[in-house]
Structures are given as C-alpha cells and as structure tokens.
Length: 181
Image (cartoon, rainbow, N blue to C red):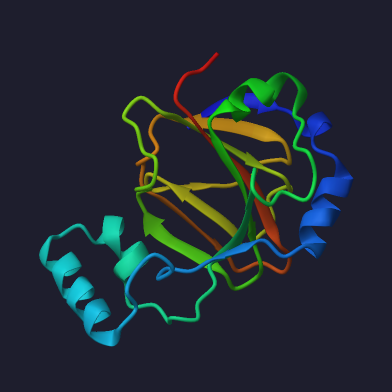
C-alpha cells in the first residue's frame, strides 16, 4: 500500500456523528446467494475443492445466515453530501463508507463486483487507529494510521479483510477508481 498523505481536514466531525447514529445497508455473506442449507454446503465443498477459499468463503463460507459484517453507505444512501475538496476527483468511480461495530468482521476476500484490472483502490480511515481495529491487506496488518490517511493499493482484487475487536466503531472510506485524474 502506498501512502498518499493525510486529509483529516476534509473529514467533518459531524459526518462521523451522523454515520454513528444512522443505519446503513447491512452487509451479509449470503445476501446475493440462494441461502438454502444444501446450496451453502455444496458451495463450501466446491470452494474448498477449488483451493480458492480466500476468494469465495466471503459469500459461500460457513458463516451464520444472520451475520451482519458491516454497514455501508454509498451514493445511494449517504446521509450527507460527501465533499472531499481536492479528493473529489477520486469519487468519480465507485465509493462506499464501511461502518463496523465491535464484533463485526469481513473475512479475507478478493472483491468480485465491478472489478477491473486497471482499477486503483483507495482506503481512508475516518478514525485514528485503535487497538482491535484490524485491517489486513495482502498478508500485512495495517496499524498506526490516523484519521484521514489516504492509502492506495494496486488492484480491486487484492486479498484483504477486516475485523473490529475493539471497543468503538471502525469507519473507513473505500474508493475504486478506474483512472487517476
């Protein structure tokens, strides 16, 4: 991951307060799948047989049907107008804000929606690093970040995942951009 600088001055404290008090779209591992027991078991067996567990367990893994991994906000449901000044040029592609409550996690996975080989992924935490706020990118544990730090990684399908075993919500802006202006 490449560090692009800190943009804390662009993140409004009121945005964080609004996100903490607003329900986003709940993300569950089975939201896009037929969640019958037979289908899940078949998918798990097929996933393990294909030796691509880190790519497919996100949607087909042995997780509880009621598991909520996070809430997201994007251009469809963001409760405020996201204006990041000079960084607005990166918001022309897909963007979403991830809110994870303590105890929520996203298993290691490779993104499979709107993935393009020449996309660039940006990751910006909206809160300072706290013990228990875990982000893993390509087998590296990312720590000691500050609110507003902007990182870029090369591909949408880089292996990554997160978990919140801390005591407060974890909030991160994700951007997937085909071209860098």
